[in-house]
Length: 276
Ligand code: SAM
Image (cartoon, rainbow, N blue to C red; front, side, top):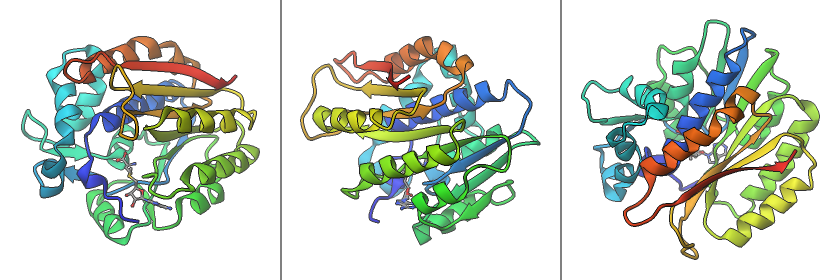
């Protein structure tokens, strides 16, 4: 486990992931019944954008800072979640998914966070001090299955691995199949990087064969032509997205594309059903 999210916090993938997560939970909260939010790969919870690691990559410049330079009202909720951990107008701290999910909790909702790396788990406990979250230090895939079905009638599981293990996609596929058998109506969000188009298409074909209904794929391609072997963007698989979320998705995706388009590129964000 070498991956450290502090090098990547607030990059374009975080903007898309966190913006859509806020919209998804908001859509589910149109109903009053309780939600359990589970973050299987939580990371540190809060990141210093002026710290050595973030400055070494500068990835936030092409992510959260672009989102802050943009005026679309469809990114207002996202910017508000980032502003909530910052005093200055320009973000210095970046809230990870645990912090963002904690901001969204209503009285009846619950939050369960999991981070296996001991050092990141220690940071996470510090970042979440005083917030109503249960924190685990377990293997994400073991925890994902063990906590299903959630105690509350509805829930969201966020699966956000670093993809540094060659079997990460296979573990996700197997765990998702088992999770679906235990919790068919639950909402699951799986983040993925886009590098090689063929690797991604092959994985999507395998996932489609699981036959899970209401399985949406959002893909954000940053550049107008694929750059083989390098990071070309990222996306989310969303299983059982609520209607209020999917219906409002096209303009939100267009706002994200426009805000995050690299110099000289238009980029593309699509939403398609892997299986319906
Ligand atoms: N979800 C976070 C966010 O949006 O702010 C970012 C998480 S980061 C991409 C992935 C995290 O997963 C890392 O902190 C890493 O230490 C942790 N991790 C990697 N493999 C894991 C595993 N098998 N079980 C639990 N955590 C794991």
